Image (cartoon, rainbow over all chains, first blue to last red; front, top):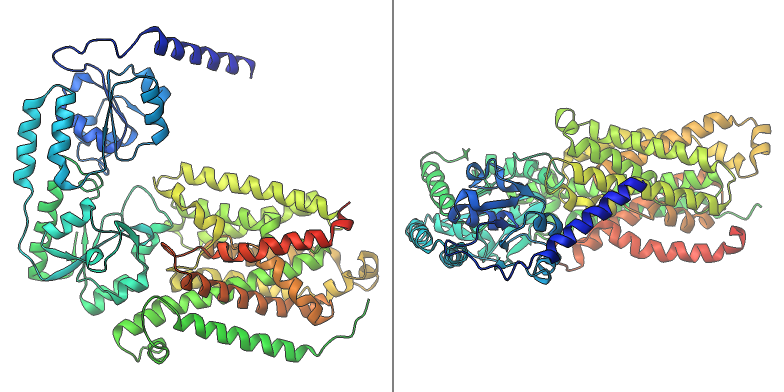
Length: 290
Length: 334
């Protein structure tokens, strides 16, 4: 016990020295932009990976390399990941921290107090992505890359014809992403009428199986039926009532990956084309689309 | 202390009718605006498809689980109080429920249930049994109330911490967010699968506990007298431990930890049966079913962002009741 205490005190002292010994703010940013960029969250990871040269990325969130949760997983392979505590972030000696999305507020406050240059991305919808790209591009010193990416994003932000069908994304525990969420906008852009919007629900509302049966959508979209592991909330996606709704009413059951719409991301437009494609195939046959 | 006992038959019938009424109310009350007649027809698949699905696929399992879980908890509470001769004994307070939750969490989140669905109640029963045996060993019968409660607090917090640890270690990243279910219980969106998983354990456990009646009656006169009346204490202990574990394990596996039912119900009903454990047991099963059905209707009626958890209501009623009981028995605590 004694040595453990001693080692952690020592580690604390070292961190303190690292923090106070070198004034981070005073260091002039080189003309090429920050050299040690650290991202704090899964959503921020994606902008950082899209706009920063790989050798300057010094830290990403734990989930950054997860194929399931990030469309930039391939780019994140081999880069350092951290658990988003202020201590771990400071140990990476960043000259720019990008936060946003799922970030602990205390961590951001702590980093701000410690004087780390911080770019905090606000919660975003799809329409905000070009602006976020521009902000991150400016912060990492890559405005041309940012302009190209934003233009590509905007041109991929398509809208399919109205299919005259109601769609709902159903998540574990009965979560139904509603207005102002990326998921809802993708559903609408793929040509569906969003059940959450037509029910007048909040951004993240809970809908019981019973309510879903009564307001039965034509297309049920699921993105968490086969994920990292079983959970109580996920059992709802296997509720016999859902199967019966498909069998009896011909409710279509469409599986989507979760990675493109978990964050408003530079690659979120892939969700629109993917869902549009699945729904186009559905129009012919009806039923289940993997 | 023999007191004049009111006729048991009448009270039992009254409670049975009450459970029937609450069961019916549980079937016809819900977010979907479907009238009672359509629900009744829907139970037999004779209404429109929506009503059929809501009645038979969603509300029926929920109402059945309300009866099963309530009866199991009421019965376990009555049996534990009788066996430990302690008015504060209850599966929730003693940590039996929390340990059952630990078993269920391990079975569910680490994929055992996916291979073998029965693993869910089996693991929960094993958890409950471990806690029951630990309490037996640590507190024993005739332990002071203080000892019993303190052992319960320790077992409960230990199991609760392990539940949180298991959820944090679980492969599913959202697992930790589901701790509220395991702490507070819920019957929302359960299906007939859950009924079938829990039913055999609750029925078997209830059978074992109902067999304890005569022994508990004798035990209420003291352990020596009970033995002189031919009660096999070892057998009685096994019946109580296995019966409680099966009842609580089966319930917690599908509904999470619903607190205080086993504490409140036997207390309210004891005066009605003249303090005779044998008659208290079946009545507590009915009373427990009634209380859980009513609480589960309550969570549907109270307007809230997302449905309330069942344990919120039973806790709001049960915790003050527990404090009142503590005040009443304070002199015995010293």
